[in-house]
Length: 250
Image (cartoon, rainbow, N blue to C red; front, side, top):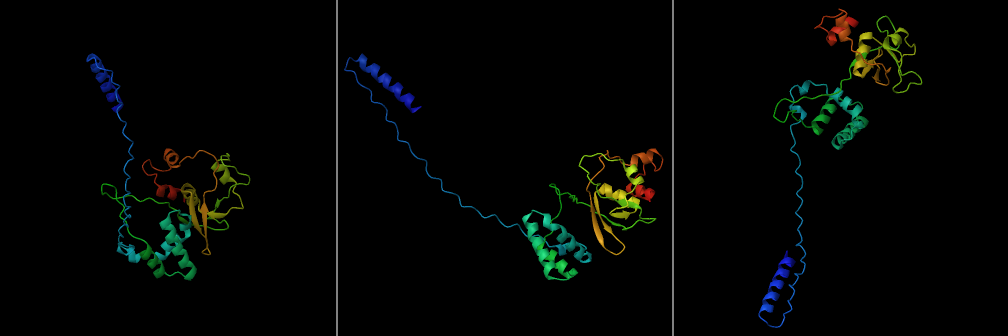
């Protein structure tokens, strides 16, 4: 814009000078302003992020005194090592240290662990309503290492050579010829619900425990049994709850 205005002004001055009859005047080009460097921007001091306010401890929870703190501690210590969250890892290191240095871990130690390292946060929706907390459910079932009249449903390992996506015989055919080398034996209704759930913990007669987890499937399309049972009149149309199905299977 500056150069355009300067050129127009020089042209007008030249025309007027010619009309006056005087000697031609060579226009002086408009000076080009020297470039100026922008003023340095002073960096704004970084404000340290305030530490979150520490909320109430677990001891403020209703019923905290009656909780099984040792069971909660063991559950946390057993599974915390898979977490990638830094805060969880810190508490996991504490729990594992307590396990190494305190034999046995007492209920009072377990309670102190939670009260020293955890705070209570209300589970609420953005509008202040009651929140919903979901978690993975792994039930416990009684099991046997050998079959008997009650525990006659086998917990099977994947067959040798099984490949993901491979189609195997349907459930009825598998159950008709159970593998004698089963991992454990359960009640039929318990095994059915554990397979739907995907995992569970087995408790044997001697008190030992084992974790059963999903490892394979037969590649068949899943069919829920509630509808067929109501269609066949085994259960009423409005009574095919989980408890009703379990009761029928038992």
